[in-house]
Image (cartoon, rainbow, N blue to C red; front, side, top):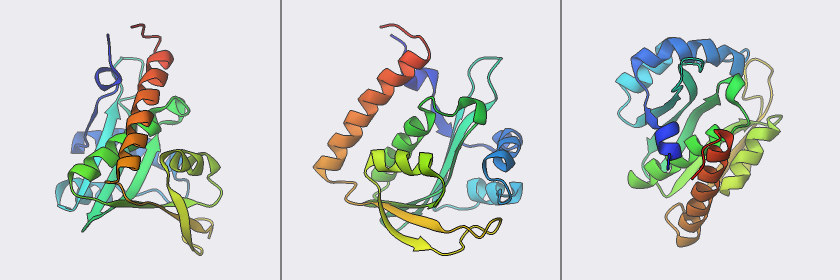
Length: 186
């Protein structure tokens, strides 16, 4: 049985990943992409952060399928960025990656996770709601490229039994979904 962990391993972002990420970043974050220097700082110098990628495993796949980062601020994990290669969106990789970010944040002592999302990005909001994130506020004119507001979303009580059970359920559904996506039989 091939597991999603084998098909789509979530690994630490390396400097060698940045060329591929720099190709995806301006497509995903039109008008407001992070510069390469910011990623370099985050993965080399920021001891309070961790960044993860899902690499393409086949020659026909892009080198980086999805990537994300988290800043650890005491007992709060803040999702600083998350993105999936446009050709690989809507296949469950963002769910798989966010699940790993939450699990690692728990291991690092987080009791809540926060993030900002564009008010117009309904697909991302649906993903976060799926995990139990709730809208808790708004940052007016947060995005420089359009002046669009950001919604603040928080997932509280990461260490509560109910949240851990929800994560277990999401993991099981995600595994089944990814296996179907890849045509992998038991």
